[in-house]
Length: 344
Image (cartoon, rainbow, N blue to C red; front, side):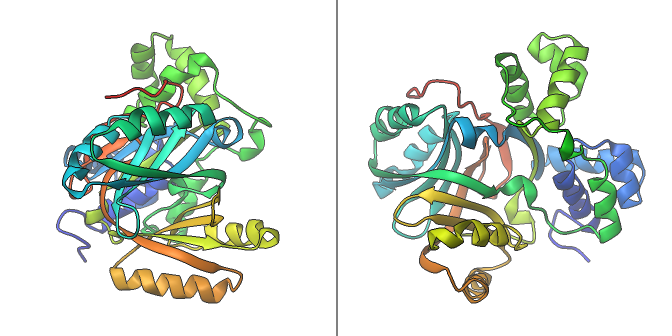
């Protein structure tokens, strides 16, 4: 059975395996899928060369604890939207850029060092782009789940367990891990290619290979760095993105948010400081499925008051990667929240 013109069942299983363990060896991937390591590597090479799948990496939980993540709505002059997007995608603090239905024209995910940096980004960079009419920002107070934990669900239970068994034991994590200044070049290099080997990481950063291995292993083990396998959404089974904005009573927010994060269609769930206090993003098969997902969520979680919903019309950048009209990878602009916002 073919799922699309470009990806067959084995391709989708391969991507799912790497969504489960993005830096797994080809030997492990091959064992999970029942193919040889060489076949697994060649299939990945074909997908990567076609820009249909890629692995990136970005900062993890320390951002919410010590820095700022925000969703920014941008209103634009319609005729200037393309030029506004061209300026936004080059900003290393702007992780994602979506053209959406609804009240806003663009929806951004931004990662910055602190609230003052967010202010500078909004006023000195985004606000100065020709064609921007207004911005509205919502600060993330807790990221309950995000895209690195979502997958295409193309593995059976045994295959998935093989991949899960390769991951580090979370019990080995530090209580409040953060990156050292020496780690930042590694994080940016892995934003370009989340599967870079230690020898190449050493060459790119000027570290010894043993130092690159030790530091990278610690970043991954503690969740300071989050690797993520992406797919061109237009070639997957889930080409439609929907975003719901909700209100949940404060006393129920943690419970509902945690439960929402376990819904298979939910890719991102975050509590925010805004007129509404919860944002949920889902990937679904069709536009009608976005309504069915909404009905399911409202029925399962009666505490939810749905405030607004929007569909993504075009995804120009996703977690540090510029995309083309079909959602294929064009090139990376790795997320760098430590850099001061500056106009393009």
